[in-house]
Image (tube, rainbow, N blue to C red; front, side, top):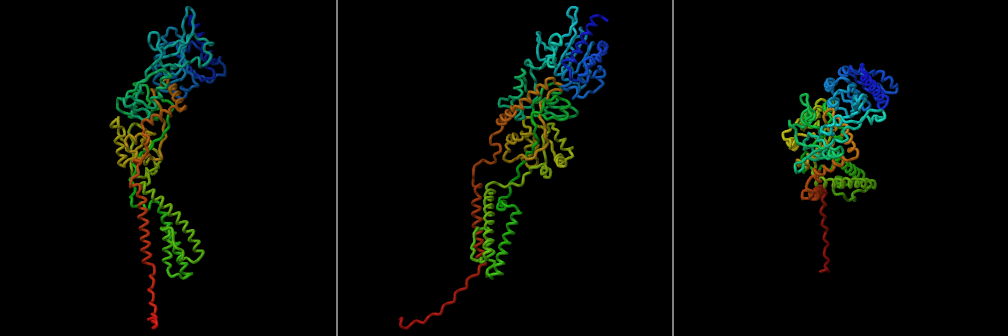
Length: 607
């Protein structure tokens, strides 16, 4: 064996021993070697020499790594460090490893034992650039001495020739220079160096992304991304629309729309309202959810009930029945007892007077002789006073404001009703969920769900809103976008939002799979959310796109129709008084004509 190779092996063994017993002590390790380095290094002996205090170490060959599917939660774990040791060119192995979607260690160490190998080409491999933190230890000669040089990869920075700094020097390897794990892995994307991220975006996603009058895009997420861009020194471009004209969904075993553009690396990020689904979790990177919301229903307000029935609306049917029954019982019992005990000549008249007290709220008690009956009437008059006051006030209210049938406020009510359900076909998983769920109520909604195609990207909900206005469909819309939609189509006075909603869903930003700076952007976005900045941006942009009188119904001006209650009450009162007077005339006994008194003879002296 050449003395230089022997020195290289000794240096590599020393460095590996220092790593596993020093900065990486206490972390899970996955050590992968090629055949040449496996013969040069005794990895098992190095691990054993590090002591029993380190956590488990997995030692594997390149072939076994390709044949074994390590779960993503293991390889991407913060507690794991992957160490690739190689002497021969690993490009072939790395290209094959690129097909393994689960391989994406957060911390990656590359230990190159061959000083002649082009390590810049190794670092340039996409599967290597997946890792958020990278350390390269490369064997090199300084004269006759062999040493290890430390590098990282900073693709957003430029070298002296204006090229990306794929291999950025960290200095000469020594335990004193790299005492901790943090010193081994400096942040790679602390400064993006003015990079431009190209966004796949639809600028009609209020309030997250929407058009200004000058044609530019703004919104809550645009402002949030601008804050992050200022922090990390990058720029971004917004181009409205996608090549296939689709929003984003999973169709025919592939992603389309914005999701497809990002997956194919045509664009770098999505900041529109895009939901976390099984397919997006599997095929894309995503930030921690910044919004949790539900799907609501926009429904046409039914026409008001007939005006002529207003006199019955203040009381329910049960209350009307109880009032009538009580009135009949009280008047009948009181009149019957007086007829039996005191022999009054007009029991029917007394009964009508007692019953009529509920209308006139006053009556004469001259026909009531017993003290107990007068006490009973006192309690009856109190009840009458309460009933008439409640009826009068409620009647004025229902005459002033139109009375509507019971609105659909629960998913169960909507499922039982004849109205159908509509949703825009933009790739949501809600239709699939409603049609496959075992919940009978949600399944009933799925059975009558109609999907509306996107016919006009600049007026997404135009056709479906017409169906809602016609009263044939209830529209499913995500989050607070439903409020903007009602105002946009000027239907705030004729539609309402159902109280109950369905399916909690999460909104995230999406990036290409295995983007190394995804965790960094995700952490910053989460900080903005936790500090309330996203909420402030949301309220600000909602104030821009929504008018202050969004929920106002009517023009706020009183007219004759609103004041008809008092006049109707007057007519009802006069009608009731006339009817009572007529009944009194018909049933009251007529007085007998008085007999003429005999004439007294005139006294003759008076003449």
